[in-house]
Amino acid sequence: MNYIGSKQRVKTFIKESIVDTVGEDLSGKVFCDMFAGTGIIGRVFKKDVKKIIANDLEYYSYVLNKNYIENHQALDYHDRIKTLNHLAPKEGFIYQHYCKGSGSGRQYFSDENGQKIDAIRLTLQAWRESKEIEDGMYYFLLASLLESSDKVANTASVYGAYLKHLKKTAKQPLVLEPALFEENENIHQVYNEDSNTLIEKIEGDILYLDPPYNEREYGANYHLLNTIARYEVFTPRGVTGLPQYKRSNYTKRTKVRESFEALIQKANFRYIFVSYNNEGMMREEEIKAIMMKYGKYDLKSMPYKRFLADKVGRRNVKDVETFEHLHVLEKNNATF
Image (tube, rainbow, N blue to C red; front, side, top):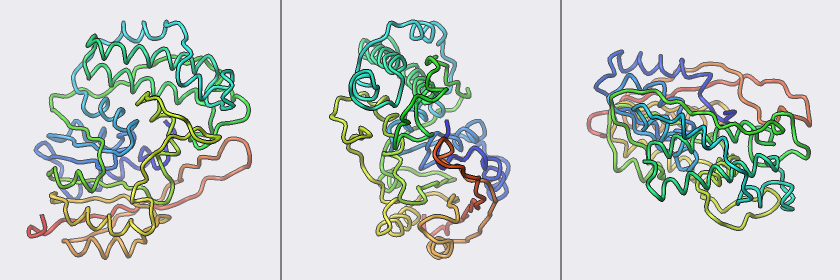
């Protein structure tokens, strides 16, 4: 997925930095990815550590991580994927509110793809309610639907708006492709909670934090993925069809510093790593000052080309170089 803030391009830098600090043998470590997003960093460490704890406030992220992180043993999915790919179309919630042919005025998907999403999503719900499939298979198939739907979405990468005309990829028929996860013997946990609430319930060795950097709301930019994932009936608001969503304190200038320090203070983890780029609401000096209160601090940095969500259409934009900062804290024994 083209995902704002994705760590795909900096995951090697992050892993090498963590290993340099903690040591190469991670087999006995509990690793927490607190703002997990699409689960890139958790996936990087899944085979190396004793246990992954992954969390995100957004429900689509929870679904992706339930599959990529919590699923860890092979699933016999081929017949299920084949059945779902051959379903007759249905005019369900996605078609009715997010496709042009329904009269909604919105065009996030072609009419055909919207009806196919509805058919698959309704079938998944029926299979789950009848206990025809267990949770592992349910989240695997639902994650597959989210990623496959995203590939044919008629947007400029995020769902803050749809395009006026169907772009080339949005005209392609949706094909459900398996969201294959890495298998291993260890059991992992995935949560869908506020980070500052969850931190008081968990403990481990390595805490990786990748909070939002600015006022950009993931609940708005990826609202349609949440809608497909939850598939609950609501009245879409405005031109974009937004549902009600909860704003994170990490996107509020008046709340971010207080929330961040509370998270660091309460963390029952020896090592804390914080990804934050040089364009964020908190300045490098502010993060350093907060973290230094609780132990030994260090900083590692890497330049990279940041993701631009508006590459399609309206203007010609060049990639902009920015810096990924990884703030490192080894907490004092007295503080955790």
